[in-house]
Image 1: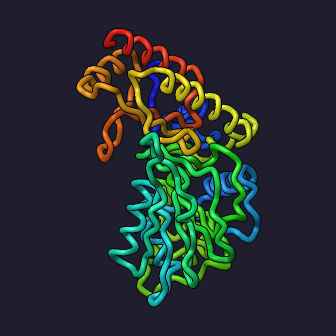
Image 2: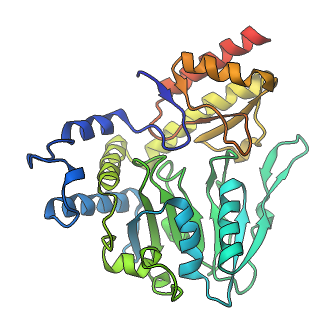
Image 3: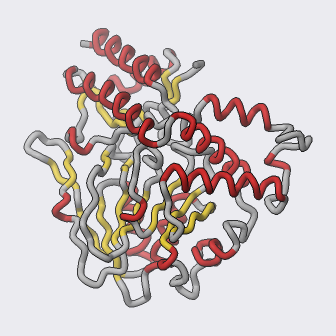
Length: 361
């Protein structure tokens, strides 16, 4: 491995997937051209698209009463699409905020589309660490839906329990932990995720939505965000990001060959425990999220002496450890160890953390 890429997204893609895409880039299946050159209407690409959807359905055990939509617009596009598709003009929705991205989704709805009810769901415990307060995840009677982000990439917080909200549709942003562990899709009304962390290059967003929730969009909802339109045209209402869709299919093949989401969960637990155990045992570093709520894929931490941040990043880069700078909202450091990151990359990071601490203690 030439570098270990800990970027939060766009992020590392499995080398096997990159190699196959490279091999097929100029000549896909003997056609004399690559996927990036062919029409999305051609049967050759339609086969690629259909196989990708079938693989995702298999990996996540998605029932037939859910539509799978391959879209553009990113997570922020879906922050708008959710209320435009699900929130009546006179309705309201609950937003369970656990970090930066769920707060962005709440603001998008509250400032532009209607009545969004804010539930602050993270507090500090007696040790000064952030913990998820699940008691705040109570739906308001009459809510059109409840929204949450299963993994907050900025804050390093992941939800390992789901609120009990009865018949109210639960809408989840899973951009950063999709396919990192088994998920019961039937617990959700809709799941949205950007592909650029665990699936494919940036530019592709996927929505998995229960079909009874389709067809309720506001009249002024842009057609390209209307789930009913996208479902009717099989995600081909406009020209989709064909290359990212193709790459997603390759990633799904890779995941299936590994053993599916159960095997990826095992690997992600092993990687995250290796990193967090080291950080907890070394006073040179601080993790501000309580153990029970720490993300398995975005490890956020600080140096005890933050005057050393710049030197830390410079030396890390010299050791081919890149993408460790924390998000501008929180600062500090962040190691994103998504599905594509092997245990060897985390071992290299831990070795560097030990050496840097010893040199500056």
